[in-house]
Length: 602
Image 1 (cartoon, rainbow, N blue to C red):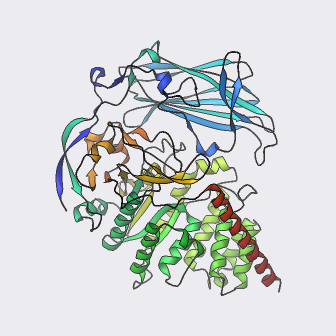
Image 2: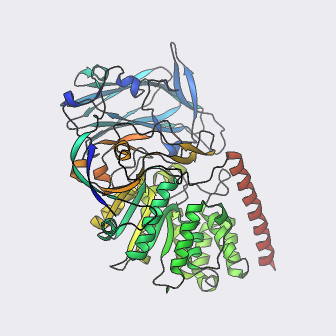
Image 3: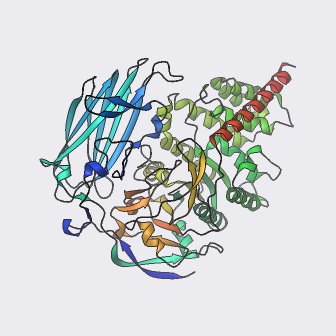
């Protein structure tokens, strides 16, 4: 492996004379402060809808005396919903200067709104919240304005989150007119729009080149060796190059650093199949054939590693996610209980143990409390099919799901805190020895200890990990300069799409200029500043680059350039194909339930 001294361009927040300014456009135009959606060409930073609220309103246009206003509506009698619930947010890079305070004015109107709240956060260069306040109002059918003051001393970003709650069982709408910001007595549009400055030559940095066809060098792996728990955070889902790098790092940590536990961003209940597969060479499951080639190869390599190991020496692989849906007619095949049903009935296919059948029926009939009690009491019998380790994990999953309640929004918002509870449970059981390590591979929004922005706002998994394990937890970032990813489009089709080209002020653009196809870059205190970097989750979006403080979030960066051998990892599928597959699975499940009922009745 080669180690280089890199003259890496980096962002330094300069005085106003050094900062890149946008002379031609205003804050209102760039950040859509007058809600001109659908977006015109001047909107660079659209408002972000909170994904937890996705299905609780419909987009609409409400007529005002002079304008059509962008709105969210709820119609009484909508299936599965009983009121309007919506939330959107915006993060603004504040003007340069010694700012002291701002007045934020919001103009809107609505019908049957129980309450509208606007959370304002003044955030510094390290992404720490300096000041926070909430504006609350109840809009009526005439346009009205509400305002709130917020301190801005030392703030570099202003985060705005607008939440609306309608009255239960009532037609409702909220219409957005404009959001005005006055800073120190001056409208924000009177300030030059601040952008992060052009990249300039900075101090010397060491980076290590990586050959993806060879083992990672010992000096890079030593970065992992100083921490008990490693968080590998990818900036995008569905890219094979990033995925392949993550799997290579995990496999080498397993082989060389005594990593005994691998945790993935998937539902814990679904991962029961994966863990059984790498423990048992005779185990098969239906969905294995649907996995992308990179993931299936990864699982096979872990299985081979475990082949000649004792139980204590074997590596475990589990998910840390949980099902944010509940078992309703809206999501009949997406509950934790149903996923566990699929797992235990697969194990019991040949054995046909009566106690396992009875447990499966309780799951299928949504009798979760009874299922927990039954499994706890009958574990000696059920363990002939389900191992003690799996029994404990199933009980943990069912109990956690019960504790999180049935409100889908609450379950979604609690996703990261539940990831932590799952991770802590698994680490305590399988990586508790002093020399044992665990690796978490998930989206960077979860693994970093600072913020989930721009995803659903909550404390990230990394926050809880750092709070509990201190310096024993460290997070790393996986980036790619270009390429493709598979994600959901606006019609819920899983589609392969080219990533957006990195802007010249982004860290990806700078690293893309390096001659090496892959590298590791440790982050030093010189990176303790805001810089543009890519964020892309489960959906294709018009915006992919956001300002982050990477030094506060991560210890180092694994960077991969794109090439033709490392295309998108996940498989494409249409929404119709996914529905058809779901119907097939539901029909198979119903047949299995009837078969089990016949066995139990006999």
